[in-house]
Image 1 (spheres, one colour):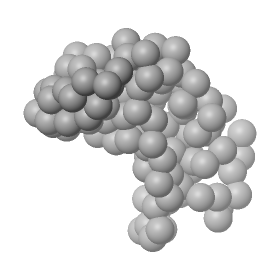
Image 2 (cartoon, one colour):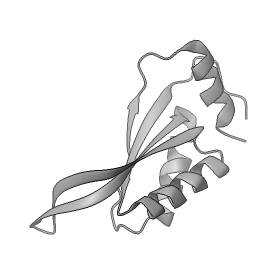
Image 3 (cartoon, helix red, strand yellow):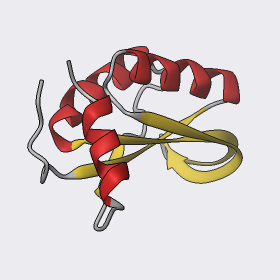
Image 4 (cartoon, one colour):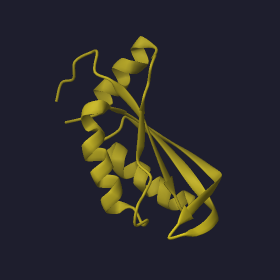
Length: 111
């Protein structure tokens, strides 16, 4: 699938309960060409309310770089494969990118 050169690039954040789960999710997304790459950051501490209870948990963060047109497929794959009932799948646009890096991300996502 060819993408227009000006297609928006997204940074997609997803947390996982541990580094091995994060690695599995990241590899799945890159192998399926849903993201050009994924960075893993272990050692994250998340504080949140779930089912009216305050939680503080160690997690790993996954940062995906993908095309906007791949977001829905990436989100669906993450939700299906994720152990959490409601996984974080949060996208923000990359406002500015180095041209060759943008081209690499565009080429790395999709069919």
